[in-house]
Image (cartoon, rainbow, N blue to C red; front, side):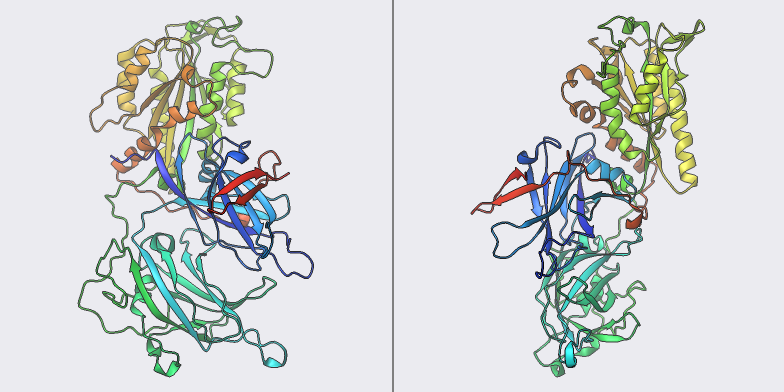
Length: 608
């Protein structure tokens, strides 16, 4: 089985309303972005690792960069990146900062549509979007020429000509933004018959490896003020582009224009022709017989609404669309990106084995200052990660191992549903203001049974509304648990539901019984849903406990849905205008300066 704990996500960036820092009479800024991984957290800027640099978008304060970044991500482990935007200044010793922002990959994944936004100190908003990084079935190599393009820049006395460039965009079927540029050519000055240089685009980036999925080619007239003018566009597919290849000499009369793609302007009128002079797939894992100038079949779909007359059909089989099969095991990231809601329930051990909570040094002792005991520290560490994926941030908090009014309770509700991690800790502290009496013997199978019932109910409600839901039960205990056979049976029964059980051991007990539950050998159709971690071994590291505690959750979630034959949902639709940007935070969103060495390496320093 391939683990889903570790995933690769694909990061894309765009910005709006950037401040023009080019200076007076120097036109519009040419922004590019540098992505830096900060392994030591927000305060480790000078220790960062540069992941890459985007292309420069000329004269544009609302850039959509086509370069994307594949980033390794593990649930429970902090993955913090700093994105710095700079204005490229030719013949200058350094480029001008336009703003920086820090993002945590888990935060972006947990957001609707997998999009986060931040305001920049200098002005403007930076957007970061992640998606599951699919396999790549090759790269499309394509060269285009334009003929008789519509002139949208005649200039004075109608003697000028457009400076055309093109963008190739992917269709975001579940995203209301519609199209996202993934490749952009350089402009060709003063011509209506441009010959652009070849472009190479990864198929996973362009069309999710589906060669029948619509792509769009847009031709624009470049303007120095960044207000580029639309000339025309056409929709096609990778298959139609491969089939549209025609030889092209310098003279248009020597070109077979029956294979040309017709551009349409905003009114739907003819705006020129595009000729594909070369197109093939490099590193073709889906069909090794595709070579330059050779395609297997001309396939058109309704998605590609182009005025196109196909060539003669080849004898070989058609190029496959590479759609995912039902048997493919999806990744954790795909389920999260599709909007699978992760719900958390918290159960806390209030048995007398924890000691008198009023005595300093016992496990439930609460100091008068703002410091946490180990129960609170474990909640803050683990629950804060799970909360990233819970949209309403409301969590039921239960207790077990205590008496109310003289009656033993092994699953009791603590107040109303807690709001946020702070609410969970507040509910925990409020218990000690009630008439609770810490007691025993303590059993945990009751809370497991209740959590399993709630997980089933929540999932069924979500399914009726076209969604998905999975529940994580976080149990915090000192380890003195009785009725282990009943607990074992409860876990086996709960494994049939969309539930994982995380047990965090608090204190210095030996925890043999808890380790027994973690190592429980279950037979199908039951699943392994239990993970045990001793908090004492991780308490001195802010993120270690969360990483160790949650490392098995991704596989367990995928095991459940894959076993039920339930594929991930499409990425939820989100308008960028609906994404509320976070405000600039000077403690996190600091500017980094990059010094390029002769060997191409970069050294980082904080901009003061």
